[in-house]
Image 1 (cartoon, rainbow, N blue to C red):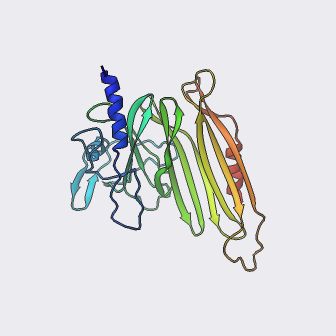
Image 2: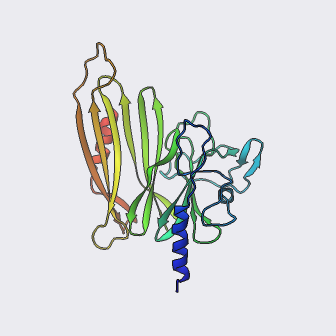
Image 3: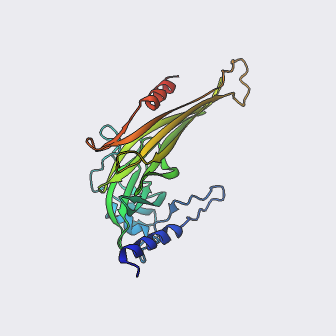
Length: 292
């Protein structure tokens, strides 16, 4: 006989397979499997739409001829702590909505990233990440935070990294372009006890300019550690590469190509109840390349 718990797990797995791909009106825009509409039904939750979930975050959200609009009702903390963001436009107009299923402490969760509109003259534009308990018929809000670290925020590709046998971390990116330069923050976020926390954030600098074309990227890999820790050891690798530019640099002497990478491993510290890096190599390379 299948127990109620196992039936719930099977239903959740079926929901993952049925997760919708949103329709995109512009042919030039590639489909993103995390894009959803407010009116779309939440897989595995009959009669429940994403609009119902967003109303748990913005209770007065309503539809009119200008879209779905509501107002901020609670103080919002920023995932990176004091000194970062935490402000929302008023009124809030819901734009792009992204959603994905993930696992936390062995339980099914839904993460939603909401475009809530812009605030004039603000570099760190707000982006709302909300997470829901997906175990019941109606997913219930667990936590919501501002994760905006730059002008445009999205889910990374891939958006999840396994950090434990029963846990995922969520990867988000915030970036802006400046002429031929691109600055991208990647945030590694996890859910513990129903609250979102930042493991760390990482800055990549990319430039398609003379005398070198500079490319930086991060990769994340979780592997079981020792001493039966509740979370895996998460290794973060930063690659930094300089290649010859494709364009003609005219009277500018081209540079010398190079390629290097550094890593740091984040381990769970039970006493501090947070992930701690075993090295500052990644941090030092970010600081060094940011000064060049």
